[in-house]
Image (cartoon, rainbow, N blue to C red; front, top):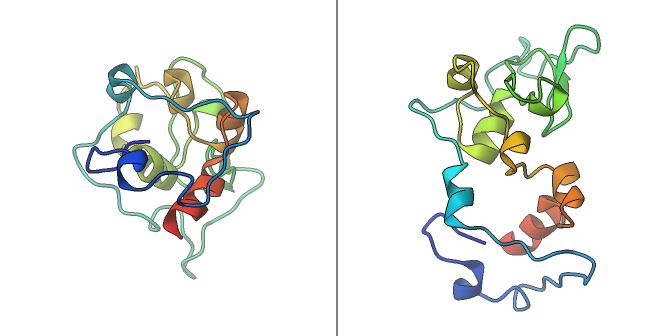
Length: 147
């Protein structure tokens, strides 16, 4: 529930005031300092909406040679990560998703042979991983928070 300035949603506005009701079937989402240590970082910013685009400025989708991103599930020719632990599609994130969701640069991650994907670190916020933890998908909450 942390905001960029370090405060919590509950400090700014209660979830109920924002019109967010959490069904009983969803578990509470709690983060600790240990979770914060699992977040990545980057030395250089990643430029969004540049990598893997065609001349028309649209992403290059390729069902044969493309790589599927665990986060956005798009099969594109963009640069993707490779996880040293799971060594599977779960560990493949495109540069835009990795930077937008986790603050990491895909070029830096690709240079680290020991790099672990967000799912293996237990911090993946894609809808599938969040549902597996009993949490609501991010778009539902995000839409309510920005209202």
